[in-house]
Image 1 (tube, rainbow, N blue to C red):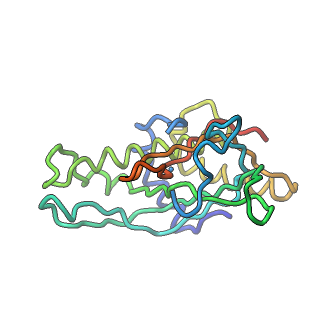
Image 2 (cartoon, helix red, strand yellow; image 1 turned 60 degrees about the vertical axis):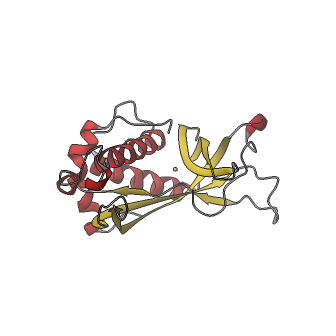
Length: 203
């Protein structure tokens, strides 16, 4: 579903960051995730359906420790939900869905006001955080849209994504992606879901 005009207009104010960011398809951890090593041939590579993409008003926050006051600015959230094509461990017999970590995108005008310093008491490297998120988001778009360019125009890419999803839905066809799930580690050493690495679109 195409996002609201309010949300959509915000992507027009992400152009400067988008132009400077390289699409990252090799770099998301909310709720249930497939177990580490449960993918193809014991790997973390899975074939998945793109189940939904939702847009929302969010806050980008930083600070609150290291003597830096907590600060929040308006941002746009993009939540991607995927569903396993093959899920033999599902307790219901139906393939389960899981979320990528949410993309939190700040406008170009807000980005320019964010701190970028080694001094955590002054806010730390918040522009770097935003750049990493933008790179990951562009990697997602580049994979789904099967684009060879680096997608400088995010606004146009969002429209293209929603047009593709609508077209595929009308045809009764699914967008199938090959992804690798990235895991970090919790304090006890157990795997912690991190990000989805979007590799290729296979249908």
